Amino acid sequence: SSVSGSCAGILQGIFTTASSSKETVPKAERESVAVSVLGLEGDRQECAVDEDWGGHGGPLKAVCCWSADVMVELQREGHPVLPGFCGENFLLGGLDWEQVVPGLRLEVGAVLLEVTQHVRPCHKQASNFLHGQYSEISPVKRPRRSRVYCAVLVPGKVSLGDAVKLHVNTRGAKAYAVDPCVLGRSPRLDWWRLVLPSRPFLGLSGLALGHFLVLGLGLLLGRLSVGWPRQWR
Image (cartoon, rainbow, N blue to C red; front, side, top):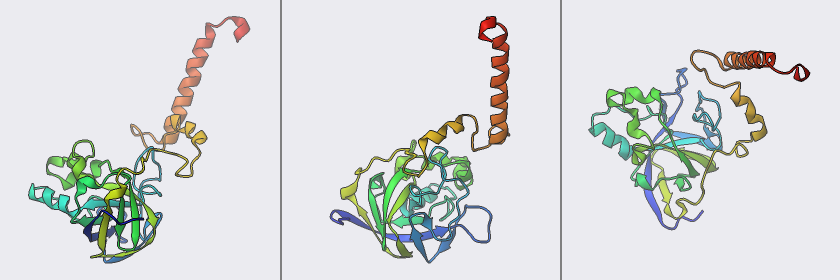
Protein backbone atom coordinates (compact mmCIF):
# COMPACT_ATOMS: atom_id res chain seq x y z
CA SER A 1 0.00 0.00 0.00
CA SER A 2 1.30 3.42 -0.91
CA VAL A 3 1.88 5.88 1.91
CA SER A 4 1.89 8.95 -0.35
CA GLY A 5 -0.45 11.61 0.94
CA SER A 6 -0.60 10.01 4.40
CA CYS A 7 -1.25 11.85 7.67
CA ALA A 8 0.54 10.97 10.87
CA GLY A 9 -1.03 10.18 14.22
CA ILE A 10 -0.32 8.02 17.24
CA LEU A 11 -1.83 4.93 18.87
CA GLN A 12 -2.90 6.25 22.28
CA GLY A 13 -4.93 3.29 23.51
CA ILE A 14 -5.26 -0.47 22.96
CA PHE A 15 -8.27 -2.24 24.46
CA THR A 16 -9.54 -5.81 24.62
CA THR A 17 -12.14 -7.64 26.68
CA ALA A 18 -11.21 -7.79 30.37
CA SER A 19 -10.33 -11.40 31.23
CA SER A 20 -11.91 -11.01 34.69
CA SER A 21 -15.26 -9.84 33.36
CA LYS A 22 -18.15 -11.51 31.57
CA GLU A 23 -19.00 -8.19 29.92
CA THR A 24 -17.48 -7.03 26.63
CA VAL A 25 -17.50 -3.36 27.70
CA PRO A 26 -15.75 -1.54 29.18
CA LYS A 27 -12.60 -3.01 27.71
CA ALA A 28 -9.27 -3.30 29.51
CA GLU A 29 -6.19 -1.43 28.35
CA ARG A 30 -3.22 -3.33 26.92
CA GLU A 31 0.33 -2.17 26.25
CA SER A 32 0.71 -4.35 23.17
CA VAL A 33 -1.28 -7.01 21.34
CA ALA A 34 -1.21 -9.28 18.30
CA VAL A 35 -3.79 -8.52 15.62
CA SER A 36 -5.16 -11.15 13.22
CA VAL A 37 -7.76 -10.93 10.45
CA LEU A 38 -10.41 -11.70 13.09
CA GLY A 39 -9.33 -9.03 15.55
CA LEU A 40 -7.19 -8.48 18.62
CA GLU A 41 -5.85 -11.42 20.58
CA GLY A 42 -7.95 -11.93 23.71
CA ASP A 43 -10.81 -9.73 22.56
CA ARG A 44 -14.10 -11.54 23.10
CA GLN A 45 -17.23 -10.42 21.27
CA GLU A 46 -20.70 -10.91 22.74
CA CYS A 47 -22.60 -10.61 19.46
CA ALA A 48 -22.68 -13.22 16.73
CA VAL A 49 -20.79 -12.49 13.54
CA ASP A 50 -23.69 -11.25 11.47
CA GLU A 51 -23.77 -8.22 9.19
CA ASP A 52 -27.58 -8.05 9.22
CA TRP A 53 -27.92 -7.77 12.99
CA GLY A 54 -24.80 -5.71 13.54
CA GLY A 55 -22.43 -6.31 16.43
CA HIS A 56 -18.67 -6.35 16.70
CA GLY A 57 -16.74 -9.24 15.20
CA GLY A 58 -15.92 -11.01 11.95
CA PRO A 59 -13.52 -10.14 9.14
CA LEU A 60 -15.25 -6.86 8.22
CA LYS A 61 -15.60 -5.73 11.84
CA ALA A 62 -12.36 -7.14 13.23
CA VAL A 63 -11.12 -3.90 14.81
CA CYS A 64 -13.08 -0.95 16.17
CA CYS A 65 -11.22 2.37 16.02
CA TRP A 66 -12.06 5.71 17.55
CA SER A 67 -10.55 9.17 17.87
CA ALA A 68 -8.85 10.20 21.10
CA ASP A 69 -9.42 13.82 20.11
CA VAL A 70 -13.16 13.27 19.71
CA MET A 71 -13.25 11.65 23.16
CA VAL A 72 -11.51 14.66 24.72
CA GLU A 73 -14.00 16.95 22.97
CA LEU A 74 -16.90 14.97 24.45
CA GLN A 75 -15.34 15.06 27.92
CA ARG A 76 -15.03 18.85 27.70
CA GLU A 77 -18.76 18.99 26.99
CA GLY A 78 -19.38 17.12 30.24
CA HIS A 79 -19.88 13.59 28.96
CA PRO A 80 -18.43 10.99 31.39
CA VAL A 81 -16.98 8.83 28.60
CA LEU A 82 -13.65 7.11 29.33
CA PRO A 83 -11.10 5.22 27.21
CA GLY A 84 -12.28 1.68 26.38
CA PHE A 85 -15.84 2.32 27.57
CA CYS A 86 -17.34 2.62 24.08
CA GLY A 87 -16.00 -0.72 22.90
CA GLU A 88 -13.15 0.67 20.82
CA ASN A 89 -10.03 -1.46 20.30
CA PHE A 90 -7.76 1.33 19.11
CA LEU A 91 -7.87 4.92 20.33
CA LEU A 92 -6.07 7.04 17.76
CA GLY A 93 -4.80 10.57 18.31
CA GLY A 94 -3.69 13.34 15.98
CA LEU A 95 -5.85 12.41 12.98
CA ASP A 96 -8.45 14.46 11.14
CA TRP A 97 -11.30 12.13 12.04
CA GLU A 98 -13.60 13.50 9.34
CA GLN A 99 -11.29 11.89 6.80
CA VAL A 100 -11.63 8.43 8.34
CA VAL A 101 -14.33 6.99 6.10
CA PRO A 102 -15.15 3.57 4.58
CA GLY A 103 -12.57 2.56 1.99
CA LEU A 104 -9.72 4.47 3.63
CA ARG A 105 -6.67 2.63 4.95
CA LEU A 106 -4.97 3.06 8.30
CA GLU A 107 -1.45 1.89 9.02
CA VAL A 108 -1.14 1.25 12.78
CA GLY A 109 2.39 0.16 13.62
CA ALA A 110 2.97 -3.03 11.62
CA VAL A 111 -0.76 -3.56 11.00
CA LEU A 112 -2.65 -2.35 7.94
CA LEU A 113 -6.39 -1.75 8.34
CA GLU A 114 -9.12 -0.74 5.93
CA VAL A 115 -12.18 1.09 7.21
CA THR A 116 -15.32 -0.85 6.29
CA GLN A 117 -18.14 1.09 7.96
CA HIS A 118 -19.17 3.50 10.67
CA VAL A 119 -20.39 2.01 13.94
CA ARG A 120 -23.96 2.46 15.15
CA PRO A 121 -24.03 3.03 18.93
CA CYS A 122 -26.44 1.06 21.12
CA HIS A 123 -28.11 1.45 24.51
CA LYS A 124 -25.04 -0.02 26.23
CA GLN A 125 -23.34 3.33 25.59
CA ALA A 126 -25.98 5.39 27.43
CA SER A 127 -24.06 5.67 30.72
CA ASN A 128 -21.12 7.23 28.88
CA PHE A 129 -23.09 10.32 27.89
CA LEU A 130 -25.05 13.11 29.55
CA HIS A 131 -28.74 12.24 29.79
CA GLY A 132 -27.98 8.93 28.08
CA GLN A 133 -27.55 10.68 24.72
CA TYR A 134 -25.39 8.06 23.03
CA SER A 135 -26.52 9.50 19.68
CA GLU A 136 -23.62 11.93 20.21
CA ILE A 137 -21.49 9.30 18.43
CA SER A 138 -24.13 8.24 15.92
CA PRO A 139 -22.91 8.17 12.30
CA VAL A 140 -26.31 9.61 11.32
CA LYS A 141 -26.46 12.50 13.79
CA ARG A 142 -22.75 13.14 14.39
CA PRO A 143 -20.71 11.35 11.69
CA ARG A 144 -17.55 13.27 12.60
CA ARG A 145 -17.63 11.64 16.04
CA SER A 146 -18.52 8.11 14.99
CA ARG A 147 -16.39 5.06 15.64
CA VAL A 148 -15.41 2.90 12.67
CA TYR A 149 -15.01 -0.82 12.01
CA CYS A 150 -11.99 -2.04 10.09
CA ALA A 151 -10.86 -5.14 8.23
CA VAL A 152 -7.28 -6.30 8.82
CA LEU A 153 -5.36 -6.41 5.54
CA VAL A 154 -1.93 -7.04 7.09
CA PRO A 155 -1.84 -8.74 10.54
CA GLY A 156 0.90 -8.00 13.03
CA LYS A 157 1.63 -6.68 16.50
CA VAL A 158 0.95 -3.18 17.80
CA SER A 159 2.12 -1.30 20.89
CA LEU A 160 1.13 1.92 22.62
CA GLY A 161 2.83 4.87 20.98
CA ASP A 162 3.03 3.27 17.53
CA ALA A 163 2.79 5.66 14.62
CA VAL A 164 -0.50 5.81 12.74
CA LYS A 165 -0.66 6.73 9.06
CA LEU A 166 -3.92 7.64 7.42
CA HIS A 167 -3.70 6.93 3.69
CA VAL A 168 -5.80 9.75 2.29
CA ASN A 169 -5.16 8.58 -1.26
CA THR A 170 -7.33 5.51 -0.60
CA ARG A 171 -10.33 7.48 0.65
CA GLY A 172 -13.53 6.02 -0.74
CA ALA A 173 -11.63 3.43 -2.75
CA LYS A 174 -13.97 0.60 -1.84
CA ALA A 175 -17.70 0.74 -1.21
CA TYR A 176 -18.58 -1.85 1.43
CA ALA A 177 -22.07 -3.29 1.69
CA VAL A 178 -23.87 -6.13 3.41
CA ASP A 179 -22.52 -9.01 1.35
CA PRO A 180 -23.15 -12.55 2.68
CA CYS A 181 -20.48 -13.95 0.39
CA VAL A 182 -17.80 -11.83 2.05
CA LEU A 183 -18.59 -13.42 5.39
CA GLY A 184 -18.64 -16.94 3.97
CA ARG A 185 -22.40 -17.26 4.37
CA SER A 186 -24.61 -18.47 1.54
CA PRO A 187 -27.40 -15.96 0.77
CA ARG A 188 -29.64 -18.90 -0.14
CA LEU A 189 -29.73 -19.84 3.53
CA ASP A 190 -30.89 -16.43 4.70
CA TRP A 191 -34.61 -17.19 4.19
CA TRP A 192 -34.73 -18.69 7.68
CA ARG A 193 -34.34 -15.19 9.18
CA LEU A 194 -37.95 -14.55 8.17
CA VAL A 195 -39.27 -17.16 10.59
CA LEU A 196 -36.45 -17.76 13.06
CA PRO A 197 -34.91 -14.45 14.20
CA SER A 198 -31.58 -14.93 15.94
CA ARG A 199 -32.31 -12.31 18.61
CA PRO A 200 -34.99 -12.15 21.34
CA PHE A 201 -38.07 -10.16 20.32
CA LEU A 202 -40.76 -8.97 22.71
CA GLY A 203 -39.47 -11.38 25.35
CA LEU A 204 -39.61 -14.41 23.05
CA SER A 205 -36.62 -16.40 21.91
CA GLY A 206 -36.09 -16.65 18.16
CA LEU A 207 -37.09 -20.32 18.17
CA ALA A 208 -40.31 -19.72 20.11
CA LEU A 209 -41.26 -16.78 17.91
CA GLY A 210 -40.64 -18.90 14.82
CA HIS A 211 -42.96 -21.61 16.16
CA PHE A 212 -45.71 -19.05 16.79
CA LEU A 213 -45.38 -17.65 13.28
CA VAL A 214 -45.56 -21.08 11.67
CA LEU A 215 -48.54 -22.06 13.86
CA GLY A 216 -50.35 -18.83 13.04
CA LEU A 217 -49.78 -19.31 9.32
CA GLY A 218 -51.16 -22.87 9.57
CA LEU A 219 -54.31 -21.70 11.37
CA LEU A 220 -54.86 -18.93 8.82
CA LEU A 221 -54.57 -21.31 5.89
CA GLY A 222 -56.92 -23.76 7.65
CA ARG A 223 -59.62 -21.12 8.07
CA LEU A 224 -59.27 -19.94 4.48
CA SER A 225 -59.58 -23.48 3.15
CA VAL A 226 -63.08 -23.79 4.67
CA GLY A 227 -64.45 -21.47 2.01
CA TRP A 228 -62.57 -23.04 -0.90
CA PRO A 229 -64.39 -25.14 -3.56
CA ARG A 230 -64.39 -28.86 -2.70
CA GLN A 231 -62.18 -29.72 -5.68
CA TRP A 232 -59.45 -27.40 -4.33
CA ARG A 233 -59.34 -29.05 -0.92
